Length: 315
Image (cartoon, rainbow, N blue to C red; front, side):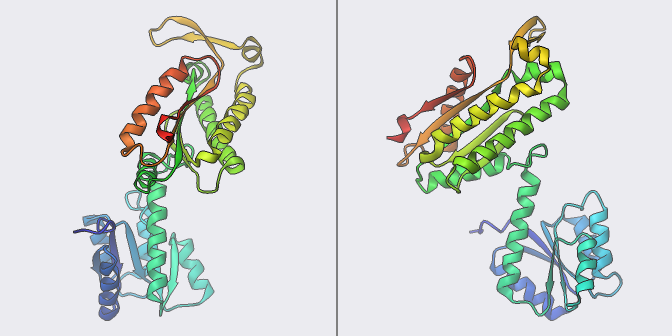
């Protein structure tokens, strides 16, 4: 049976056979898939054959040293996002700076302690996954991270609140003011959510960005009401500043609806669909998403910013 890490591929680039074998064994015991290369040229060929999730790169090698190999990895658009940990017996400060300036993500000096190296490998892989999966506009975790967070809470039978946040009348605002202003509105929501969780949350809360103007909070039940009210209060105070003075004073904008008809739209508001979960009442993320979608549809039919709770699953 594969371990959860078995899908993560690591390329070990080391010209000394004994060190290469030892590193391979240590990583394979942790469940990683490992390939090896004996020098920089061999490493670049292996990377072109199969893109690894991480490269452990020795510095002193024949043909192509680690510095130049790292520079070429980071200089190619197809491989620039592959994280690199450099391994070297050179402990000089300038050597480390040279490696980091060349694009290396971390630097480990030989002889290394296996536990420390494995911890660095885990940290870099986790960071890399979050970077790949994060929403490019807000930097918040995306759908994979959201699902993983929800699955973990459901599996642990934690009590928590799942909150789906959606902007009302965002499409009209985006069409009327431009995509640039639409992006500004989305970044504002992300900032408001992070602020509310920081001020009112428990310290173990999660903020995710589904995409577009849709966001998710996974928070402690004890803090959920306070977080929701903080989000609404701050959004209603700050969102009108995105509009021109005239539109703000009128409280409406006029643009085309989805059928192409001219129509007046109110200023944006926020709908929060909140589901309280406790004692294993919900077992699958899909069920949670379905309930939240029903609540959201009901909430968006209400005027202004609202929180719509489904608390039956808290019993």
